Image 1 (cartoon, rainbow, N blue to C red):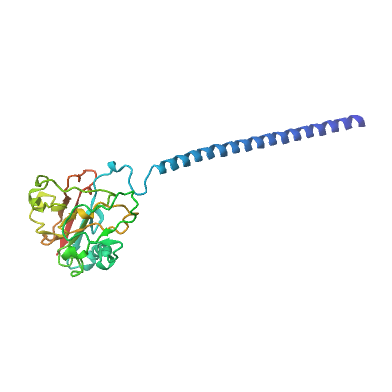
Image 2 (cartoon, rainbow, N blue to C red):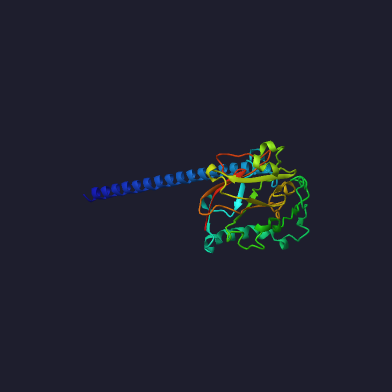
Length: 304
């Protein structure tokens, strides 16, 4: 009897040990498989990362730090204006300084780099003429010349819109100024119109050699006669070619874009007017999808 009991107990212990051993072996195999899978994915994704980094490095070797690779796909420059506002609308009251203070701050910020005292360093700036001249070539983009000098542009060229005599830029008198510039494109050379044929009849007197003309007018027929006289201030009252080409931030860090100030001197008060401004050149086009490509339009409302 005792012998049978001992055999039974022994058999049960053996079974328990076998089961425990089986579980341990299964766990070890499962853990080993997990480790192998982990190592596989580490190597797999490491190889993918290496291929990706190698591809990027190879592509970077084909790119220049100074010269755009695919500049033939760049659209003509945009025409931007200051002050900017939401929904391209400038609205203010002559009697309320707070209504036009944000516009004045925008103009002051834009003109800060154009102060004469900030353009005195002869290592960085040079005089480029008092009249419109041809392109100022400063070597190839990838040459060994290094940093290029920038043409000086004095804010006094903007006369009534310079902010030196009239600190309100005409807003307080209901004669607001806009300051306009062509957006920067590396190595872009705008070409003036070849003849008056490409200009509106009213703007044909603005054609000059070495100058990109700008002209503003009413956008809606019903606003004709309500905008009054528009004055243009700047070097040649347009964008002179000696400020081009632009060599980029690395080679042309002090570059100053030429500016044109536009002043509306006799706008009909208390009416919302639509005004459109355009620049004209052989390689300047317009797009219905981009309202600022070579032009802009805005709403102007001056309250008495």
